[in-house]
Amino acid sequence: MFEGFALDFIDVGPGKLRVRHGGSGPAILLLHGHPRTHMTWGQVADLLAPEFTVVCPDLRGFGRSFLPEDAKDHVNSSKRAKADDCVALMRSLGHERFSAVGHDRGSYVAFRLAMDHRDAVDNVVVIDGVPIIEHLERTDWQFARDWYHWFFFAQPDKPERAINAAPLAWYDALSPDLMGEEAYLDVVAAVSDPHVVHGMIEDYRAGLAVDRQDEMETLASGRKITAPLLCLWSTRDDLIDTVGDPLEIWRRWATDVHGFGIDSGHHVAEENPTELAAAIASFLG
Image (cartoon, rainbow, N blue to C red; front, side, top):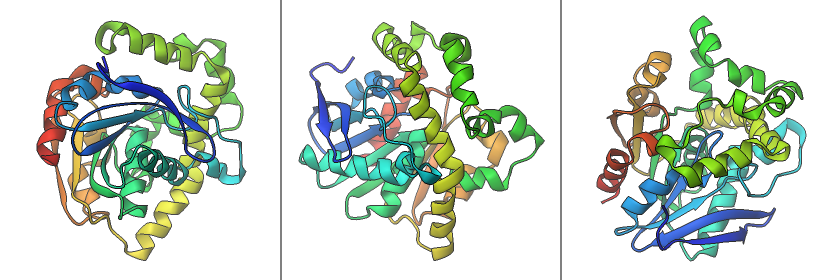
């Protein structure tokens, strides 16, 4: 994977992000989810590289990127802070404008990029995600049962203790079968590092604190994303069961919304990279 890509650690101000970048053409930023690292994008990146310049970082607090200091309301792990990192990263690589693609927790960073940095983001793709408050407004017994980790991870200390006691028992679905041996070893190293585990859990704490507040303020302001937005969802995951029609939801937040489902489980970049890459390339092309 990542054939011909460079691997660098790039200073974005508060710290350094680990990033792979390569290919040629218009720039695309690919943002991973929990508990993945940038390696989740390897197969997709190779498929896109002939037509696009592809940039795949570990988000702050994940993988081998810098761990932000703890702060009130978990602001240093906010999606706004991570979006600011991404703009600094892309500009350091010479990309003043780019398209942002985010999966899972990375979709919230892509959303914040498109909302806050309109001068930088040409297009946005969100995969298996809607804004955080859209989930919270629909919370019922089923969401609490199936997405309990949102609320458990928001608690102090105990999530880290539970995960660090047996990381591969907690993340028992990890396997090299689809993601490949290199990506598997990378994510195992991440979830086995207590510092990284704390950084990943802080991302969830920020979600129910500063990120939630930022989204409420954005919605109240009436601002919408003006860049074309593509919403993709895994048809063998539970997003539609949880929130209903994600396109209808995104139309509350963006003016130009498109989307469809892809035959896959949740980790679509690993389970169906060919169809995902084709969907991204078609939208951006």
